[in-house]
Image 1 (cartoon, rainbow, N blue to C red):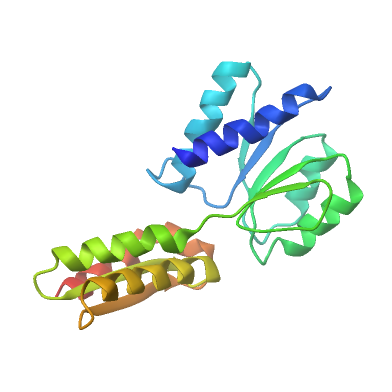
Image 2 (cartoon, rainbow, N blue to C red):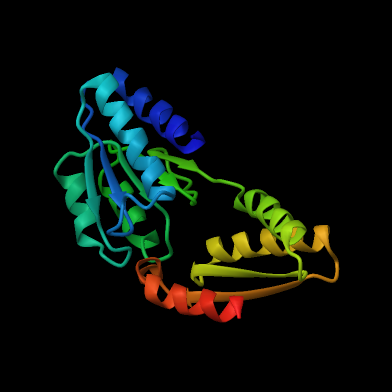
Length: 200
């Protein structure tokens, strides 16, 4: 809910400018995932309904540079996307080359005049999840499965472990990651194998 409200309020600030042609870049092909992407997508649809302004939604792999640059060149403004280490250089370059293009960036900060960024305290959410999971566990043993092994997901894990240990100091947390990059989010088969192993 908070993601949708933040997204709505940020994009609405651009309505007072002469032109608005928003674009949202998704990092994974599955948008209706009942999670992060789904919340953003619902916020976009609500925005479109209220303002009658279309938002271009597009999947661009985090390692693809040219398509991000192309959006700015085609006049999309603002451009909304998540920060990843793969996009750091291209985002900086696009901001330099298109100073009038505004960027709304999740999970990253840029000391640039045309950047707006949002950072979330994910460890606080996962702390609660870890605490509740351990409290409900009859064996004092719980599991954690992360998508890609990146700092953001590791932050989730740290909060999860702290919450679990706060509930029961002698609790055991089994942990695993599906992969090393964003393709891990699209690998449910491997996730199933990991969770099956943890349950046993």
